[in-house]
Length: 237
Ligand code: ATP
Image 1 (cartoon, rainbow, N blue to C red):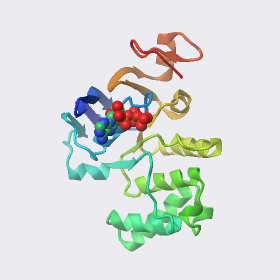
Image 2 (cartoon, rainbow, N blue to C red):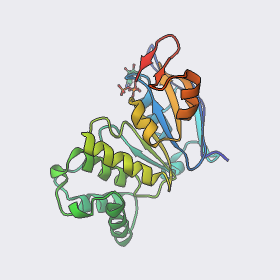
Image 3 (cartoon, rainbow, N blue to C red):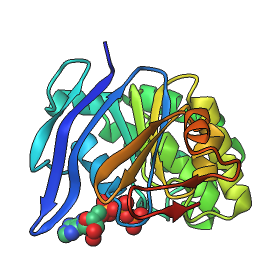
Image 4 (cartoon, protein in one colour):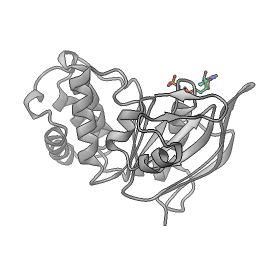
């Protein structure tokens, strides 16, 4: 059974059709990149999938279950601009988030220690988040998003605002995490998608216009330096 099935999902804001009848099926264990230019509908799609906003129409189901509060625990979500309590240390923050996720004090502390190691922040446990680099903050955000052991992790433009070192660290963390969970992340940069994803979904003007592996797309478009033709509005990456 698919982990996540999306049927004709649509979001309209007044006269703007932000997401237009998209259909997606995710198999467990895949790392999928949702790629598209600014305004394509990536954030709106991820917000609907994670249950943060309601679709205008269409349906999302996880392992055959409809979207209701219970399935929130299956999903980890990192927004494009995560908010941290910057006066806290990374360790204090994760324990606090763990408690909010209904872990006992002991469980929250144990999970925090595991996660700090997993995301490579064990040397910064006692440093205030306000002093973290952009890449460190994103890795802490990822730890926060998976504190409750979700089955799928969704990340909105996780490397968009990072310098090359932060970007490399976050992409290599995703490479590690994809061994353990299904990942869906958005990006507008093809090389980021190519680096870690098994499959790409190309979103343009609210519609999925192509899907497949990078190799599939290369064959289809027969270019080495990929130039993806987005229907009548070509976009070069
Ligand atoms: P970006 O990379 O710039 O964040 P995106 O691919 O994530 O773009 P969305 O943020 O999902 O795209 O926006 C899709 C379209 O919907 C855009 O035209 C945007 O202006 C519009 N939109 C998004 N949120 C709202 C809102 N709350 N009210 C009205 N229009 C919105």
